[in-house]
Length: 182
Ligand SMILES: [Zn+2]
Image (cartoon, rainbow, N blue to C red; front, side, top):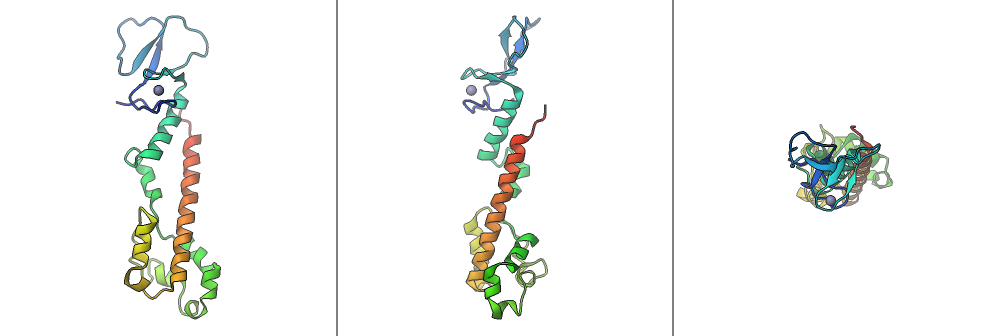
């Protein structure tokens, strides 16, 4: 069982709660480390038994979220989906308002981004997909000659989805860093 990651050395099995005072019986050393019997105000709550870091539970929680967010999807399953690239109504709207779309006159007189890539669009199989990497997404957008969509428009949409995904990830990341549960 991991209590969290050490904010200093980032190990996930070395953080212990500091047991201050005299224990009546031996505490579980997987969870606790003995702090000593002198108890004063503002004693650190947590300690790393590997590097000696001491500090608060809030700092451990923050380090744990950063570590897990940065390194593994499995540790933060709720976040995985945000990493994926996906066509959204917002992205299609941005495409429609883009210069690239405006310049493709013969094309935009016949179609709208929704009528191509939307849930009822001609290429709506793309709407149901999501991708882990831009390369994978690009590969599907360009399948079958891009469904006849001009390359400039495909590239514009990929660019829009990419930048929106990055922004969303960044704001989500900041929310996690600001989160305090105790
Ligand atoms: Zn440490």
